[in-house]
Image (cartoon, rainbow, N blue to C red; front, side):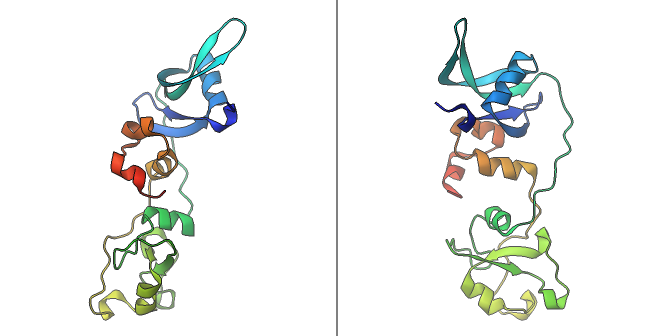
Length: 177
């Protein structure tokens, strides 16, 4: 087993997810008495004198206020937010484009609330027009800026034991694979 490949979900003392950290950092935090183990894997680290279960989920003993960094506005993150689904027709695609709701030539900017995933066909139909100028074309949902939880959910989908702490259901493990 390679330690650097294992990840541990770090929770605040209030059980809200903070981050996903590597196993080495989690073990150091445990031996410094900063965290308690909530869940462990079936794997162990052994030394001459101890056998230590590798943690899967740990919780800080003291509450820490976290000011999260903004999630970067990238093509990949927009597609993740929209689950590879065209925000005009609702179909899921492997190859998807990004569309400006308010086109750049009409004052639209590159911000979370103005960018959506769109299939090539819908993007061609919309072009640089406004939605109100196109018959039978509407947004499925208004785009929003994702939270830190969104980021953790996307990384944590591979580990089912984290689902209750990341507010994921079993169906969501199928999304975004």
